[in-house]
Amino acid sequence: MVNPALTPGFLRHVRSCNRHDLSGFRPFAIAGVTVGQVRIGFMERLLALGLPFMPDAGGISLHPGLTDAPSRTRAVAAALDRLVAEGTIPKLRREMYTVSDGWGRPALMELDRAAIPFFGVTAYGLHVNGFVRKPDGLHLWVGKRALDRGVAPGQYDNLVAGGQPAGLSLADNLVKEAWEEAGLPAAMVRKAVPVGTISYLMEQDKGLKPDILFLYDLELPADFVPRNTDGEVERFELWPLSRVAESVHDTNDWKFNVNLTVIDFLIRHGWLTPDHPDYLDLCRGLRR
Image (cartoon, rainbow, N blue to C red; front, side, top):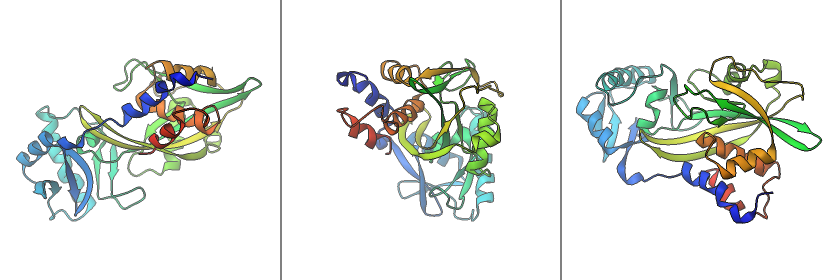
């Protein structure tokens, strides 16, 4: 076990993923519902563009004449193209995320993944902890991210992780991501057990990330070796859980939010116990 005196090595990751100052942000609303938070400077740029954006109670909203999700999506997409052309936001991903007032609620519009943090809307994703039981305890499959990744190049990741796009169920996305990232056949990945969520509110250069991640545990046979198919992972390694815990505790070698998924796994599987002086802070901090 990790020396309890060193516990802040875990807690620092939770705090890092929840570091934000909302005083520099203003609400973004659609049809009277606040769905995000935008930086004041970005809000001013959007208002300078004119329609479809308009000032609203100290924040910004879409014009009420846009009465359905498709029309809002088209109008905002046209504005995003202008913002990309002028260099205000980076190149778009051409992958759409649903914007709504809660998980499972009707879409108010769809927004390109690259623009999500600029508008501070909630993004959803899924992470799979792929593990193997051995006589000496649990081992976790760890992915080493490719060096050409735009986010966290060369850092460690879960066996499977991906964002939740519009128009795809969580179950179908799980199958898709598991095949692309780890070569997991559908019959195998459907045995993954949903074990809850983690969430955080993180301020970055682009804006806010109020993310919610759906977590799955997948026990794998000892002879299975994952194989990346989309170029996002350089290699996979099977680590004893103690090595995973030590690495997360002592280093910054892991993608920022994967630290949280690992900590959650350590708690749920009894590796981190209530004897830990920061146990309650860790449990509370994983769900904002």
